[in-house]
Image (cartoon, rainbow, N blue to C red; front, side, top):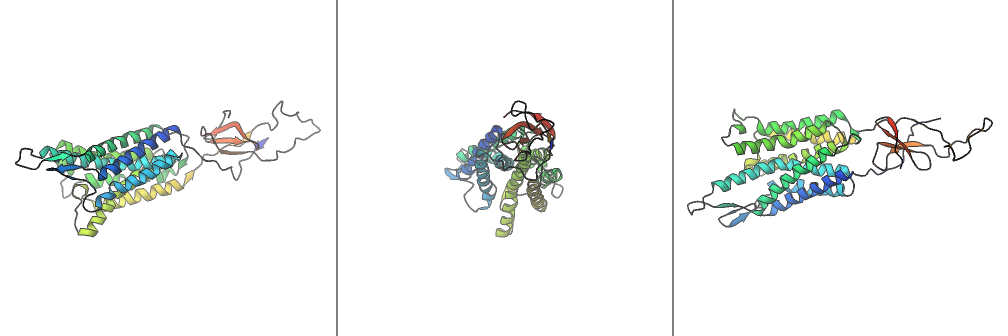
Length: 346
């Protein structure tokens, strides 16, 4: 007897895997470090300390706002939402590249300071170390999320997912492409060059790699990276509107239009991809409605009664497979992954 796929399935809450919760913990921790570092003393100049929060509010779009969103997403991840966990980790990694570059700039400034009374003495503050810790923790969280991906995750539209990842390469080009024939890679300082490469390539390339799996958590990660880079775009636009010129200094780029459009395209494409879920096709189950020993086998003169509640496939509430068969009375041992039926007792 064959049971057809139902038009509706029971409502099932999909729970995050333990590894997703690990990524959520790391994501929240990194975000809290970013937020704290924004207010903590970054450097001290002849005894007077300064932080990123001093002065105008341009830099808040680079760290504070993405960190707040990452905390919210991470809390959702801790409550069992794997999409929130992935979004938080993506936001963290999106901030890590710029953070690494800025901390290299601070480190170079402290190296150039003169502590002998003939120049200014610049010293690193606790905010410097908090930013460094946040960047390192972001990389660990992204690695954890990447390693924890499962082929059984719900898939999104593959084309939109990959395009969202490819769009982020525009951010890399905006940072690294030459301006009037001069590239940031022409700077005669290996450490500064390394900072530009990390800023321009690390998060976009990792996001592109994740986009090719086009699972919901991977696309949420890409969205997070895009939103984090949008912070730079907003900061530049706000700075232009406020002063008519760039005051963001080293955090600006020579190809602003490319940066703006690339970030916008990535965020929009990733958001649409998340909304276009591609469900795997669960096959029709073939099983005997009357298990041996449960009731008497029907005689040739007695037709078996139809089940009162139609059986149907639904997302596995235990999170071990894509689908599990609801037999009309409870969750059965019949499971399905990518169209292949198996047996896994509850």
